[in-house]
Length: 505
View (cartoon, rainbow, N blue to C red):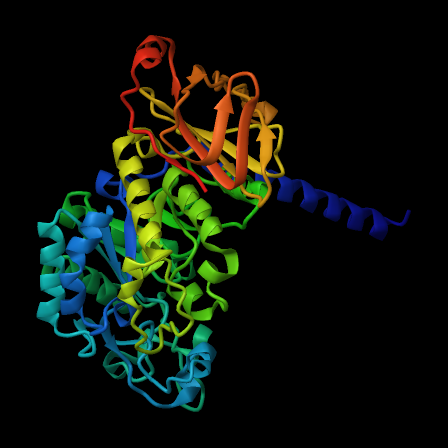
């Protein structure tokens, strides 16, 4: 073997070892704790309002009138897509390809902002946004705004006042970033100060309780860390930042949660998606779980409601509301909206009559029940990360996932069949030790699940349990129940004080 060949093999081997180490230990990110976040967020249920689709009027005033409806559904956090003044430039050289493909010929893209401090007239006035937030707060809800700081509109006035806020080509034209928008330069202190003032204004003047950060991982993390420090000082630690993206260590200080995209309709993808991510993150990291948002609803054809089917979406909703993290519903998910006219680039209001007919009527009741289940059982929200969620092995690992949520006072078991075939299986309460690098030599804790599966589920569809035969679960069925401790068994033999509901086909 030549010296060159030897060195090549050594580099490849070393790279492979480092890749495995990073995948397994996330640069030891898991040795630290994620930042503490307010309970209104960690216990919350989010709903993304796309004004152009949410009401026929498409305004903030009309959306405000719908807030009691969301409150009744079980939503606690209203998340607005950007409603600040959009750029009206008709030069399609500065339009995103998908904006052009939409066919609306509309220059107003909600994610191409010209003025970050005032509401676009399409949605109403600054006062309308203030009143929207005030009504949400009156109802006991929180409001999350959308921050779009990676880029701006090409005719944004502040580019003339501060040309250093972006990059320029030698011919004097603005340099385009992703999506063909002018990309902003966070190496410039003045830009950072400008956006810090913007965040302060949105909290003080309008009533924002937190922010979802568009392409948050495309902006230097130290900016978000500074922003959160400022927000904590301003609100007493009661505001949040949510990242559309994911960086291994971003929840130490910068963000309260990252986006948790649905990994796919298979048992292995569902479990592997969570455990693979958890190994890379600080302890207790949180994710906003969803299967559709403004981007997916605009681009995916057929819409997921139609492509996957109603029963499959129901199963995904069970995943969203019981898994670790915060569930995020998109406009119309709760009434099984599958309108393929939908587009973020034009006004395409959803059909609210779906609420009075199937499958919208059943879906609405279903989402309301899941929100109540999450609210009634703190085990779903008390403890984030692997200390609160433990995956369990099953005898049908290709088809069925099982996990428990624990908070020290109650244990809830969730078993889901991700296939379209009936499955019989058992679930093991024995939990293997965590894989840990030998040089760390941590004290191992007993993670086995203690107790007996309750005979009556809290919520189930096409599923039954027998201590002798285990679980029998129909296509896309699920079982959610308490795991009873010894002191609970006697009481439950004569009376079950927990709400019980089954869905049968």
